[in-house]
Amino acid sequence: KQEVTQIPAALSVPEGENLVLNCSFTDSAIYNLQWFRQDPGKGLTSLLLIQSSQREQTSGRLNASLDKSSGRSTLYIAASQPGDSATYLCAATNYGQNFVFGPGTRLSVLP
Amino acid sequence: NAGVMQNPRHLVRRRGQEARLRCSPMKGHSHVYWYRQLPEEGLKFMVYLQKENIIDESGMPKERFSAEFPKEGPSILRIQQVVRGDSAAYFCASSPIQDNQPQHFGDGTRLSIL
Image (cartoon, rainbow over all chains, first blue to last red; front, side):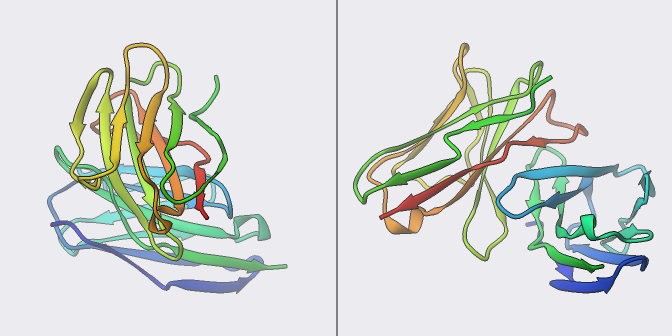
């Protein structure tokens, strides 16, 4: 059974800093992994989807990597801004199964 | 191109009443997923539907909960005889096909049980 964890649970950084969020999964036979952000009282916004055959995906200041052998994914945020403050969730899916979400990392970027 | 639409945004029910949550997927999406987010907990998968079919309901409680996605109209998550523990945010997501396509989420329905 797939289990997903995320560390740290919360992170506070000054504006402009580069940061890394970590996601670990127990079953390395994943099909894909998706990173989301959730703003308070809102739904989830899809950030990046990495397929099992890919090592990384980039979108603007965001870069997500995937290492299936170690069961890890990282989300790198460059030059953080106060508008990046949100909860970041990773979710993994195995073939024929549905997403298993991690508990999230609450990010605060201080101006 | 409207995103995933959920209504109502907030729903208040008394214990024992029924709650109906609606989800209209993005245009062109025929796959719908329901998730529940309990206070201070992560998102948990409940059920996956295609038009007129339940594909996977492994995450849905066996009693009081049901879901449908009719040929016409939105997907409905129905909770009968609600209890305090049903208070949560219920999110719907849709995708064009299941595999290797990102799921797009609605803003959720926040259900409060008095």
